[in-house]
Image (cartoon, rainbow, N blue to C red; front, side, top):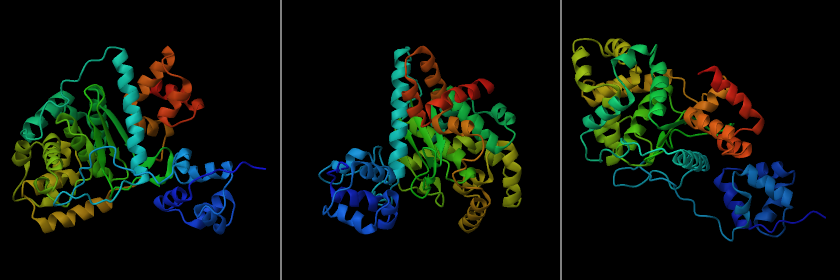
Length: 389
């Protein structure tokens, strides 16, 4: 007779409702009737260990959760900066997908920090080099000089999309881990909701990390990267979801307001932008012309013009909606699996893991778990990295 699992029915019901899984869906997962699942939730019957494990996997919770006496209280692992006027959060609790990517990022960041500490890494001077009350232009100048964001870098970019790639590369060269994905692990059915968050930053003097939600419109991701880098410079970790319908100065959260202003100056320096903006020229023509100068999308330039009150609100909102509709949003996980993996897990982290693997400092299993891949895929990842040196 199969061993019964003495799970807590209330926890099973909590996990099912939390993940938006119906009784019928849960029942189908373990090949029973919905009535049986209800009986388990009411603790009138017990599932087998095998069925309980299958349910835990389906509901995206650790198996051990099912044996807790009460449903766990899940809190945001990072400061929640997605505030509304008055300081309230627009969300009652973080979604399972958001919790997963934060916890995954923290595990990656902790391993990388421990690894570079052992090889003698020293603190990065730019982390926390400014406070929240610093002049945004000064913070932007520091980010620009540290990462080499200048006219020469822009001239190397073939497009604004390529400029994002170069900026990620410069960020990682300076010691920032950059993770970019729109899904949980490699599961395209578990997409990250951009209405919940655009990105987050984890401040650390040895291993700072930024995460970009790739479910966001492509045209907006470069601004998210610059925004999260600003968090590193002012030592403010947190989950971000700035409202792009508002000017940078109108964001309700003070930290988000500051980081938006820094990001705008990093990507589109005010003095040069005002020098090149044609007041007598059509807004669309201005934006089209200046994309070639600054190598950012029309969306980013539109936001800068709006912040500087060069575009009135009605036109801004109309163009904002138009540009977002034109931009291909979504998880964007097609194409080469290993290229996507390097974006999801950071090329810098991936190279460090493979180096540690060669030194015997990490097991194949641990390396694969940190990268969310199979052990058999590690050698293919190594070959991919060697091919793009």
